Image (cartoon, rainbow, N blue to C red; front, top):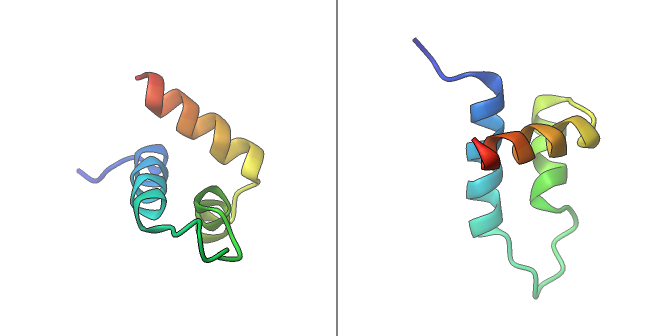
Length: 55
């Protein structure tokens, strides 16, 4: 069985966070990229990631 949507969001956020270069001023934050990819409001993504961090 596959991973849940929340888990996939969390793992993508972690990967984007590792890859993101804050010095060059990339246009979108890792959180925004996850929200765009899953077509979900950023508030929901933030709540999901916080719940996955604490789990």
